[in-house]
Length: 260
Image 1 (spheres, rainbow, N blue to C red):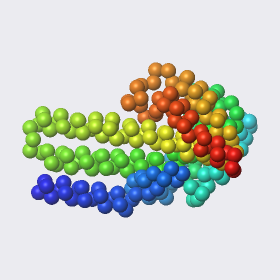
Image 2: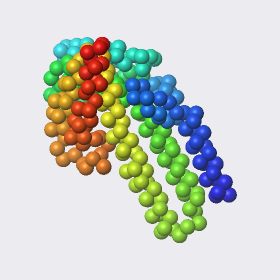
Image 3: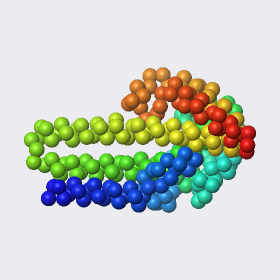
Image 4: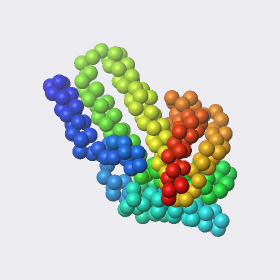
């Protein structure tokens, strides 16, 4: 019975991969998306609406004009990769939040704190390009899909080890959880960040912003990350790793910038 269950679980995983596998735009990487994109977009629209009700929205005309100006150019550059996006750009009034994010369906938010680091339109394009790239690449869908598969694996492991000694079984399940987190979830998250850097750099270049602005911008962001955890325990790559990879990507981005 257990062997049949494990075989069925393995077969189901293979079938899911073959049916739900998609290609990430710009990089061509294969990714697993188990959740329908329109469902994610609908959920994101609801969450974004709630966030706008709960979080103060900036009325600063300079910030709003800059975010809309840069955002519309990034949206145009990303348009072929996000044909169904209903774009919306919001500036949240929180000077302590040095952050921005984008959600499925084209919902993009920038916190006023980011303007401490993003001094120019090109800087802001690097930020917004990176966040939009996460959406275009379907990273949220991929993470949810990974979590669903990990949960399925844990369930199969629990079923398959039900007759083991309780202490050994608990140790095995704990090892599986740690392995899934450190061996799959965190590395994939860091890979997603690096992939968003690559795609975002291309979007910024296509939008007419000099991609070389990314280097000093991320250097300034790294300076804000004192006390960050070691890279192998972090969902983001170390600052030095990010800068090195950006320098490697720069010739490709500059070619896009010059040929736009």
